[in-house]
Length: 260
Ligand code: HPA
View 1 (spheres, protein in one colour):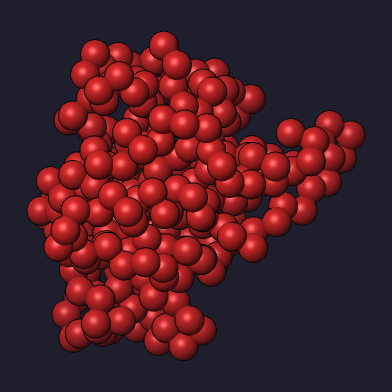
View 2: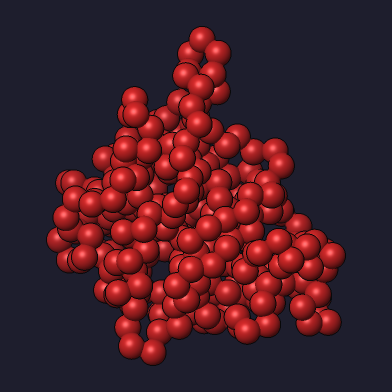
C-alpha cells in the first residue's frame, strides 16, 4: 500500500471516519515509536495521526513532533495536512470560521525544533521558511472548499508553548505584532516537515475568541465542543481535496535542504 498523504488531527479530530480498511500501525524512529492509522479514501492511501493521542492525553508541549514527522517521512508520505484548533485574535474572525494560514510567529520556548543538532552526528542546517506552508497544498485546499465554505486565504498563526491559554496582555501583543490566530502546535510541525522536505499545510479552525477579546474566561470544553461542531465541514473539505493530491508535488518543498 502506497501512502503519500498524511492527515494530522488536532484537538477534537481523533479519528478519520471516512477512511476504509483502517489499520493501526507503529513506526520506529530515532525519536521513539509512533502509532498511527492507515486506510483509504477512494483508492488513495492515507496515514492518520492524532496529534494529542486518541484520548487527548498528550499536551502540546509534550507531543513528540520529531518522531511524528520522521514516521510520516519513513512511510513515504509527501504531503501532510494538519488540522488545528485556534483562538482568534480578531473580532472579525469568529468561532466556526477556518483559516488556511500562510505564515507563523513562533513563540514556543522549550521544544526540540530541528532534526539537525550539529556536532559530529548531524550537519548544521538553516532551512528556508520564506513560504512556511506549502503554497501548492494551500492552493489545492482553497480550490476544493465547497461553495459557502468559510475558509480564509492566509493568516498568521501565533504558536505558543502552552499548555496554558494566554493572558489578555499576551493576546494584545500578538495582535499588535501581526498575529491572526493563536494555537500551540502548527509552527513546530511546519518547521520539522520542511526540514525533511515534506509539503505541509494547516487548516486552522477557530474555536474561540482569544483571551480578553471578550470578557469571558476560556475553557477547554468550549474549544472541543466548537471543534466537534465543525467536524462535518472539515470532512467535506478534506474529501474534496484528497483526490486532487494524486499527482507528484509541483512545489519546491522537497528541495528545502540540498542534502535530502
Ligand atoms: N489559545 C491557544 N491555543 C488555542 C486556543 C487559544 O485561545 N484555542 C484553541 N487552541
